[in-house]
Length: 473
Image (tube, rainbow, N blue to C red; front, side, top):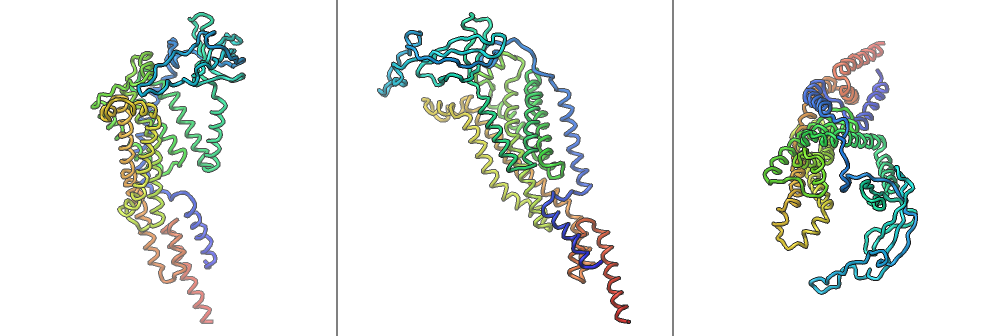
């Protein structure tokens, strides 16, 4: 085989190695990983079948909060009227203790808005009703605006409909389209797969997790089964059915178990009931069989799942790339280098999680900031302690995921490459007489070690014998 013929296969292999997917692991390691993941995936599938609810249980609407029929409507007329004429005068407010004028004083004397609204859907489509908006109201309407109205069939006819919200369909769809466009443009095929995984997660959440909890199944069991299904679908769909993804799945699973254990211990120890807002109270009133404390723990597990996926996938990819850059590195060296990356990741992710919870509870934090109580009293009140425990339990799981996943990935990738490296070094020593040929054979070993080395040696001996015969002539 001529040097030119040796060059092309090696160049092609080098390109695939640098830009293609990670090298597959050995058959033995695939069996070991499969021995763990296949029973787990089977258990998740069985859990989905056993707990599958078949839809939310029927119930009669209570007419409270979200539990009431709604229809679409449109504002057809807005007129300014005297507030006194429509019996909507503002109540006088007492001055504040500091002597400041009462809030809303600037609105005194302003006219009210009498809004005429036409119902556009439902059995009473076409009916109109009026509502009065005071000057100090946070929401005002314009002609042609679409709104959502609640329907109370037992109320008097003139009071059966009331505006409950505005229609946000258009801006929400536009924002979703911008998000999808950005994901696809930047992520390309991987971005498309991420959107598919997001849709699948939404399907599991709406068709399994929520109805199963409403049917009375244990919220913790439902969250573990549903969250595991979301994890398997999202990770394998976005990152492929590879050993690298399987290691990330194992790291995520172990961290979820830790979060579930810590959450259960501290929710019970802190005597949290989970019933801290009107929505939770309404759910418990409609479905008394739901275990509210388990619902709180289920929320912690599902809320931590997305960030856990990010951490475990990143750490696994870091270990694999470090091994590609330095094939001779052992698992200790890989673990140390990847942990330096992981520590930076820990700092940013924990801060992100804390700020996400703080942002969601910002009105509550503002309320307590003006309360006449100490910081300790506020922090240990149930409504705040629930958010603190939720944040800290999730953060501990994230922190633990970094060294755990990194160690697992380092052990797997090091064990996988050990046999290949030995074969490559043996072949290189056998053909180390000619540096150029030795380099080409070394690349060939990465693909097929014994055959490549055996084929290259006879070729070189035949070449030398041919040159010897020409010298004799």
